[in-house]
Image 1 (cartoon, rainbow, N blue to C red):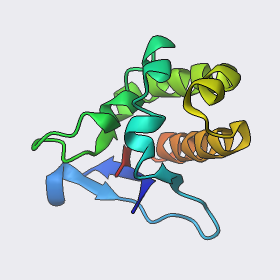
Image 2 (spheres, one colour):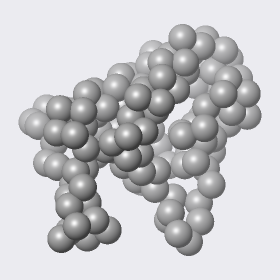
Image 3 (cartoon, rainbow, N blue to C red):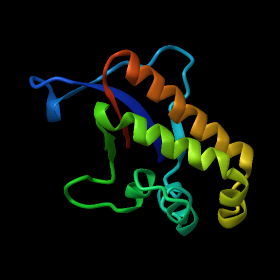
Amino acid sequence: MSLDIAVWIPDDNSYAGRHVVEDPPDVSTAVGAEAFRHSLWGSAAARQLGATFLPQLADVTAENRGHLQVSPGQLDAFAQECDLLTENVELLSAATGYDTDRILRYLSNVGDAVQRARAVHGGIIIW
C-alpha cells in the first residue's frame, strides 16, 4: 500500500461531509510508501522541525483510521509546514535515510494538491 493525497470539497450530502474531487490526468498523488507514515512524516526529525500535520499520519486511531484531513481553513498552515520541511530536506534526509529528491517529489505532490484544493475552496486528505 502507499499513501496518496486527494482534494475534497465540503458537501453535507456526501460521505463524511466531503466530496473527493477527481484528479486531473497525469497528476501524481503519491505521498510515499505506507512505511513513510512513521519513518518520514511521523519521524522525530519531522516533529523536531515543528511539523504537526504530517506527523498525524503516524498517529492512527479508530477515529481517523490513519487518514490526515486538512480543512480549507487549515491549508495555509499546512502549506507552511510543507515549506518548512522542504527548506530542511537535507536534515530530514540525513535523519531518515531517504533520498532528498524522493522527499522533495512527495512534498511537491502535496504542494500541487494544496493549490488544487485552494482553487475549489476545498481541503486535502492523505490516506
